[in-house]
Every structure is written in structure tokens, then in C-alpha cells.
Image (cartoon, rainbow, N blue to C red; front, side):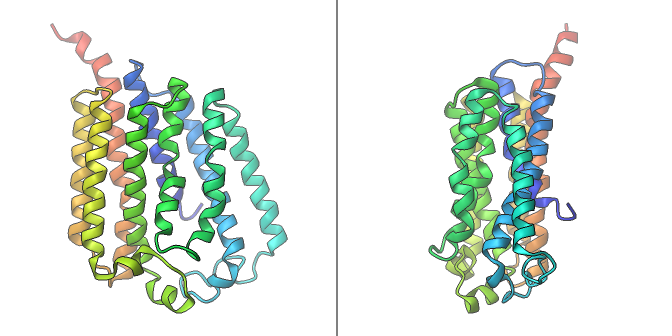
Length: 284
């Protein structure tokens, strides 16, 4: 709870998708019930994912400067206690899932395999950030599925763009640990791209904006959604401009700033449902 950025980044694709589906469904505003349920679910499932990751990575965490103080790695919490906490968080997530429509429940269950295997991927592939992208972007399908009871092109385009967004920002995040990762033998896109990280992140961010624009056009949406996307794109461009992969503190700050980028996009989508229904009827 003292590091909420992970919950925000898991939540934002859910909120984007919910708002985009509200526009497509001609709703007067994104469903407050869904927004709240996704917020609770994001906190619970992000916590469960962190607990599962810390259980599996406890030996590796002891060898990495940034992670050796984690509760399990440092011995503050036992593995059985961590499993009990994992079950509790998973049950909260299950309660949220069962509050959604049947089609969304099935869609959510389909993500569990990806969530379970992600912590192991850095042992076998140089692009574990891609698996994280799939897991963290599943909400882009969940919001649409909850409103529309189906999966359509706008949700798939939003999902694809979100995967690349996560892939890029987690590459930035991974540069904090690249020296330790190389020693321990853990793989990441930070080590894969090295000095080409800026170019790789720039290309990913450009594709993100393109895919999100395609998602908006396929609905279609109004001007406020596009203004939100423009603000989102400017924020991503500013991230690339200030990125310094040799400065761990800056890498963390740039990574965290993606919450603000995502909220800008959500604000545009939400305004696209709210303002036409409150302002346009007043116009002559």
C-alpha cells in the first residue's frame, strides 16, 4: 500500500476500456460500479502478484541490492505466512471477479495462467516484460467485456497498445537492477537493449499511440478522447526526452510518471461521455 504505482498501472487499462465501452454503448458516463470494482480488484491482484513473485524470487531477491530488504527475502515474513496472505488477496480478487457479468468472469479466468508464469519468465527469456505486458494489460479486455459482454476490435487494439506500453515502461524500470541482474543471471529487456533502450522505448511508445488512435477511431469517439490521447502522447514523448538509463532514481521517476500519462488518457475518455451529455443539450 505504500507503493501504489503498481496498482495504478494495473488499474488504468481497466478504466480506459470501461470508458471506451461506455462511449461505444452511448452511456452517459463510465459505470461507477465497474470503476470501483476494478480499483479494488487491481489492489488485491497486484498484491497477490507481488506476493507470488516474492515467494518464487526469494533467493534471487537476496542477491539484488534493491530487493534484498523485501519481507520474504529478508526473513521478516515466512513462506507459509506469505502463502496465507496470497490466498487472502486472491479471494478478494475472486469476489470482485464474481461481481462482474458472466462473459467478463470467463475473460478474467483466462488471464490466470499468464499471471502465474510471469515471475518465472526472467529465468528463460530476455523479454519477460512482454509477459508482464500481457498480464498487466488484461484489464483492457475486462472493461469492454463487462460493459459489452463481448470482445471487439476496439478492446483488442487497446489491449495491444497497452501491452507495448507496459513493455516500454517496465524496460525503463528494469534499468535500476541491470548490474545485479547480469551478475545473478536474470534476464530483462534492459540488458537486451542496453544503449539502444531509448530507441526501443521510442518505437514502442509510437506504436502505442498509433494503436490507441486506431482503437478510438474504431468506436468512434469525440474530440475530448482525442485530446486525452494527445496529452498521453506528449507525456510519453517527454519521458523519452528526460530518460537517462544510467540514473536509477530517474528511471524510477520516469516509470512512475506513467500513472499520470494513463490518467490523462482516462480523463479524455471519461469527458467524452460526460460533457456531450451535459453541455451539448444546452447549445442552441
